Length: 88
Image (cartoon, rainbow, N blue to C red):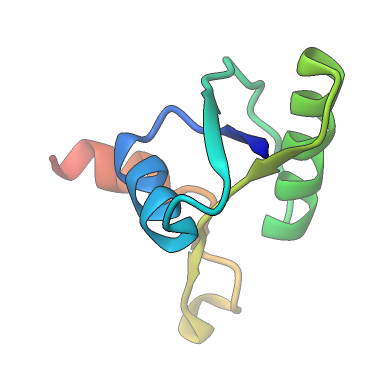
């Protein structure tokens, strides 16, 4: 059985393949997704809906967020991607 995984991140793809250990085959789908603003849940839901609309079949997505209670539990949130990219 095959599943679609919407990611442009080779490390995330490799990690999922290791977890699945050959039980399922993974089709990596790289999407130019529009930037959604909001909480991580809203962003993840929007990304999943967009991916499904484009490929027309069930798809896994993965979003990561880091927040600090000192910043109201919301920062840097989805901005983490840009912070990490700027550091490397």
